[in-house]
Each structure stands twice: as structure tokens, then as C-alpha cells.
Image 1 (cartoon, rainbow, N blue to C red):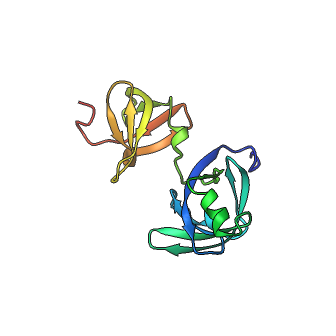
Image 2: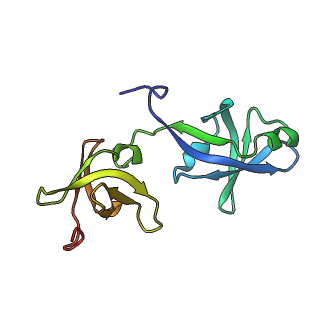
Image 3: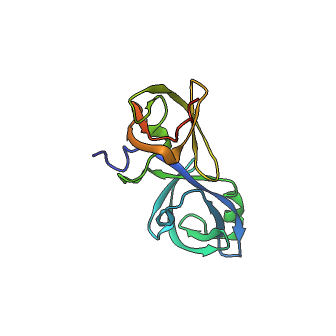
Length: 159
């Protein structure tokens, strides 16, 4: 298993704006893994690593204290900075980067195309195949990273 430093990094959020006078910031977290903001967590930015000191949910975002941001003036300088982190090893999660270039087969073993894009959709992200077919991610049953994706789709989806 690769170490945390060897795993691919994923964008997990962005610093939106300063909050208060003591260097706290509002973070828009793009992942459903709130542990990304647990105290002691190191996040990666284009300015180098930054460590979470404290975080609390606030409306649909988070108020976060980071080790390197000590004042409102500091916080203003971090506005818009994207936060990244190593991918979490979780066998139950399908990672978007594992889908690209994979061949998509239905439950009967028929090849329907190669994944060329993944479109964000509120109900379910959608696999875009080179054949033009669109397959909701909810129908994915198995993923062999960047090689093969098996799907079990309703009758007529590929017609």
C-alpha cells in the first residue's frame, strides 16, 4: 500500500473568505468526508502544507482555524486557495480518476465504450462513453481501476 505521500491528491475544498478577526476562515468543503477538517489534519495548497487547528460546521460550510493563518489580514490573503489531500483508502468508494479510460461492460459482457468523462449530476454522476452513451454511476457494479467498469443497467439504456 502506498504511503500518504505517494497517493494521488484530490481537491477537497476551498478557502472562501475571512471570518472574524483572529484568522479564522470559511471553507467550502467539496467532499462528504468531514474528517478532512479534523484537528491535526494536514492539507496541501499551492503555498505548501497547512494544518487544521479547529473546525466547526457553519451553515453549509465550515469555520476553520489553520496553523499558518493568525489574523484577519492573513486570512484575507488565503481567499480562494484550493485545499487538497491524499486520497483516503476506502474499498467502498469509487474514485473518479479510476474511471477514465476504462472499458464499460454490461451484465451480459457486452462492451459499450470507453469512459472519456464523468459529468457531475445531482442525482448521480454520469459516465460519458466514447460511443456517446451516458451511464449513471449508480449502475456501476464493479471497477477495475482504469481498465474495466461493469454496469447493470435497465433495459434500453444503451439503445
